Image (cartoon, rainbow, N blue to C red; front, side, top):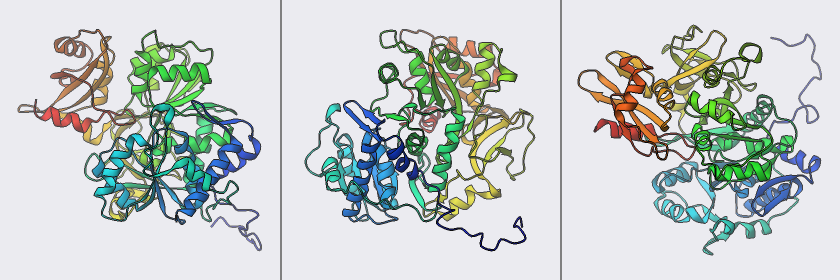
Length: 542
């Protein structure tokens, strides 16, 4: 079907078909952008020619350590040059990259190392004690440990393991990269957060990562030579694939070990950062930064934000500081962001600040690398695009994972009905824009009524004293569940429980208002997402 009547001799050959892979971006950049700055971290500044050489040395040295195609090489690293180099050097020797969350406890790291069967582990000295503890807990063979020293941040090598720079010295600078023969070959292994039981291993292929880089350039309106600040951890969906993308456009990757408002403003001012991604908490950090750490800059900074929907109030404030925010949405299983709140200028220019911010808080429409998003009911039937009917976000396309490693049952369940079933509950507006109501597990059912924790959080975040808010269910003898709010106040703020409940009642139906407010620092993941499962535990005992 769809073939021409006669296709004699029209075959795939080495001349007309090459498997798609993001590795090709750096191979090209080493030639086209050879003298441009590729990676920056303090005193570490390398050109694309040097970047390619270091990645080649890493690939060659890993082969020397016995790493074979299909093996897994793991990392426990912050956003440092070595982590970026691993994104190219590991697959360049045919291996699969497994970037591990540095905030995990030793038991979970041991499980990941065992489950992925890592042959080598690149580790920062800061995380070496945890890595050693994890290796001691492993059931299978231990990986070879390579320490990646960071003396400029106060983390010199311990001297007990092979040193990363010494390893590179052993490598061949003109090593012939092992390119994929099939774009379906595995490129990376990422583990879900594992908030309910053991984390699942999400497998990416070369084709998906390549298409992520291409689609992101379009959606982010990128031109040549952007300067990208690594705020999104490179262990989270491989930094949304942005490290693989930068060589495509000859961009500069600015590594940032410690995420703070001061470091972000300094990078924008002194390195000329033009783009970064981050959770809404990062936007909140910048909005609430004291004047003493803010820096003036003369260009607009493009920001992708993802995670919990950002409060409209935060979006309104951040843009006044010189940032243009685009809300995106995705999951580990989709290589990172795959929808965007594309701004329809013809329809929305001229709206006031509050209306603009409310629209920008939507998760939006499919990015170029994804098929159109649908909202489905529990039987996988499409639901109307009326902005009211809630269902589960379902996604399909080349940027959906291959599946869960060694877990065919979970893979089959995730792909039921021909789509990836996200677990996120949303409505779809008549224009096709998706707006998350909640995670399925975060919906609060109070007296038979569904309460969106996201909606309540958005209202509370509008209070001038509130820095951050999270809402979860609290058991109740009468209503079954009621909303319980956990709040971080701004420095010097004095709002109390009664004031916040009263504020909410002026803006929400009574059953949606929090019945309890707890003032505390909110537990967060390494990517800035609030750990609601921890808050649910606390709420049960209140």
